[in-house]
Length: 165
Image (tube, rainbow, N blue to C red):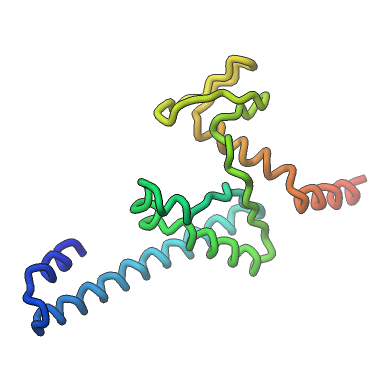
C-alpha cells in the first residue's frame, strides 16, 4: 500500500499512469478491507461457538478515533467488529453485553476498592485485600462482575434456579 501510494505522488497530475496507479490503490484498499472483514467474521464466529454470553466494555470508539490512538483504532476496526459480533449473536440467539468501562482497571476485582495506577503499571496490587493480579486480568474480572448484574442474566439465573428446585 505504502509503495503504491508513493508511486502516485511521483506521477504527474492528470496523466494516464497516475490514473492507473490510483486504480491500483483503490484495489489494494478493497483487498485490505475484505481481509479485515473476513477476520472479523471468523473471530466473531469462533467466540460465539465457544461462549453463550460475551461481555465487552462499551467504549466510545468514535471518541477514541479522534485521539492519539486513532490510527490503531481504525486499523483494528473495533466498531465494525462489535457490530458484526452483536448481529451474529442476535441471529444465533446468544447474548452480547456492553458494560460501563469506567474504572475497570482501577478498581480491585476482589474487594471493589479503587487502586489508582498509571498506564505503565501493569500489575494490580490491592493494599486493602492483598489481591495481586495482572492489570488486564483484574479488568477482565471487573467486566465480568459488572455483567453479572445485567437484567437478562439475572432472569436466566431465576429460570435455571426454578427448574432445579
